Image (cartoon, rainbow, N blue to C red; front, top):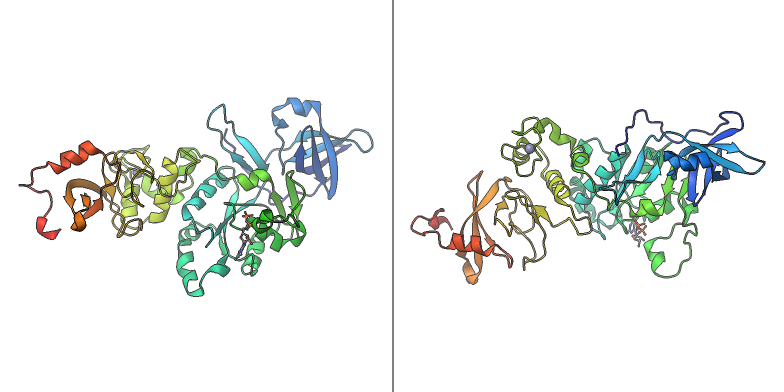
Length: 432
Ligand code: GDP
Ligand code: ZN
């Protein structure tokens, strides 16, 4: 199911009497057969009317704007759900896992990451960006826990996020502990309905508690020991804090982000590729393995941020959402999804199936700087210390490098490389 979002109204509109005997309001929590609706600051418990219950619009969620009919004095019936501006949803892959809307009418999703404990995981940001934008929600990246960063290292660490700023996504560095940067964050949220999303432990609850101490949300430290200060409501909730800011915080939002994203949706989250993609040889180029891919060329030439492209590759290939996508990659040569396990070494630098590699690393795992060309296995060789290695040659720039053979490398291919006649070695022996 695709959602079209035409005009967006920032914030939740004030509540007013619509048709006679009817009120409008916003759902702040949903229970079986009933919801709580905030109508002009008054909380109304509403039954879900039979006509609504029978209709497609019955999948009500927090943030939904609705009309409420007054049945008798003190009883209210939910009448109609008004069209949604945005949705935060888990995408449905097939009929057994249909799309599930987690919240409606969120203007801004604050994607929270931390610089340390847990460490900054740039690639996770793209997953969240994709999932958030799918529903028409504006993203903000909030980098929390900057108090844990050595001041001199702050700039280098945060430089990794420049690519997002260039895409027009606000990036705010802040600390729930010291209060640094929270003013900037709040300024961006004024008048908006927001949700804080992100990996557990990054400090979402701490941030919300600092912004609005009345919330008294349980943080990780509290969860471990006593439950003092724990928020007792487990149902979905919408909080109004100062400056016209509404915050939606539900269990669904807290777990959000582990959802899978369709390839088309994913591609639309990398708008900086668009200008280059027109130059790809194939109109439906996935920029993964196709020859004549202008996007890969742009990455090689430094015109597209390499970390972003790597992130794209991982998200495209990540079809097993419950495994960490961080160290896995899709082979640029044969398209195989390669996981870190089974290599027998800490890092995987070539595909165990076709033995190809990509010209990226200076040292194992740095995924840093080089030209990004495909590296062909040209020989097997023994290194100093008796360690067996594959010699790779970059198809683009000709660089040679050697790579330790992994425990699960394709034996037949290794063997065929090993028996290549050494009379005509495919690399200059004197330079090894
Ligand atoms: P959540 O799972 O995203 O809601 O994260 P929590 O708010 O529960 O925070 C996880 C842990 O990080 C807790 O132990 C917090 O005390 C700690 N924490 C949160 N924000 C900060 C911060 O800005 N600086 C530091 N040093 N610790 C923080
Ligand atoms: Zn391409």
